Amino acid sequence: MLIISIIITISLLVIAVIVLTSNAKSKTNLFFSIFCFTVALWTVPNYFALSTTSPNLVLFWMRLVMALAVVQSISFFLFIHTFPSSKIQLSNKKLLSLIFVGVLTIILCFTPLLFKSLKIVDDQRSPVVANGLFIFIFTAVGSIIAGFVLLINKLIKGTGLKKLQLKYILSGSLLMFLLILTFNFIMVVFFSNPQFVKYAPLFILPFVIFTAVAIIKHRLMGIRLIVRKGLIYLITLVVSLIFYVALIFFLQAIIESTTNINTIVINFMAVLVIAIGFEPLRHLVRKTVDQLFFPERKTLNQSLARIKQELPLKVDVKKIFEITKQEIMKVVPVSNIFFQILDRKKGSYQDLSGDGGVLDLKINSPIIKIMMAQKDILVREELPIQAENKSEVERKEFEEIGKELDKRKIAIVIPLGLEKPSGLVLCGYKKSKEAFTSDDIQFINTLRRQASVALDNALLYKQAVERIK
Image (tube, rainbow, N blue to C red; front, side, top):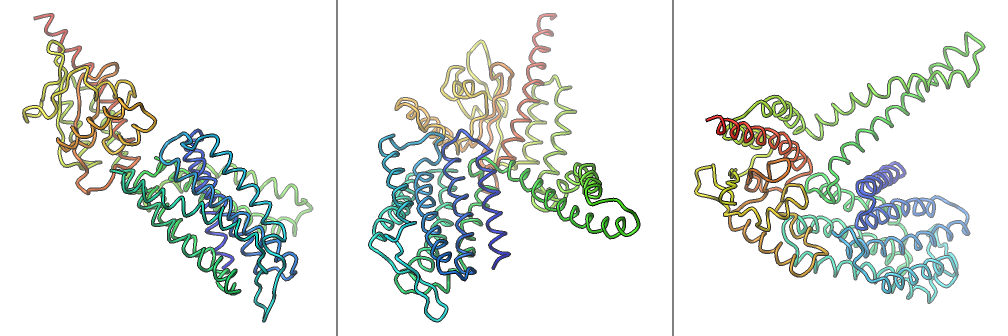
């Protein structure tokens, strides 16, 4: 169980760091990281509570388990309450009250008011519970229940990508907390049976697995790209450490037996070898990780190489759209793709796909205004998230845009043009029915930049030819 505990603890710590560094300003990311971090730390006192022989130390570790459970439950509630917004949705008064109650409960956990003493019967260790347990239940268990009520309510009201993410969070969290409450709390406190405590790391696995799936497959907090980088650096670091230890043993066995070189010099030599080989090793690990876990990146990189070679040289508008369509269908197969070009005389976008105009867009329409303000593509699944913290008028505008896109079965609107959208690429939903991943969005944005340059050049060339004529 020690190896499993270490693996799960490291996994949670890696997830916590990755989420936090992906957007340190986001309070959703902050509370999620705190939750992961406390769950990871929680496995440590659980292990020592079972392996320590001193009754006083066992009681201390048990009290620490309960204190961490308070932080864990409150951070879970705050994460659910804030998700997916980047700002805290709780009022300052309520937030401070919650923190105050939490701090008092944590202090209570280290006093005899929660656990009076330790009872050992047939080598089974169980705490003697005091009346302070009710305060713990009110704070910790109450926060978890409130979090799940809030989560279910958000899931019912949620749509698109947000709803998909919430399903994974609910499934993983529900399984984890049910297992922990049943075997680590109810069985220990009410039935004096702690024999299942040693399996605590296994109870966390559902949360790790479901969260990992949401991160990698469904763009939970948009960090799939950082997950890949984190995985590459983690594997490189582990391999480097293993190689370093093996190299030290080898050098000590060979050099110390034949020369008078001391340990410091041997360590310096080993560090130098690791420093020189770290970058080539990272490159090798990156290729291996991409082949095993991110095979689609090969297609993506090949497509990007073709785009950078072909698109900037094209001066025919239709040819630019054809290449754009081909590359999107290769990397992100979607149900359909339409093209529209801006007619500046009419002040609206005209269809080039032969479908009679997919969207009747004016240059001052809400969709164009949003894309110009954000200077980014418009993703239908992310409209509800973008509407958070907006005024009532703006939220209604986002809803109307969503309805219009749903009516036309359009999932992504890609503006082409360096200053103002001179053209639009309208993409349907993925043929696989899955959500667009971070890699999909990154690829589309890279394609958009190249196609924008090509389209602007093509329009300038067209204007020049018309002037000459």
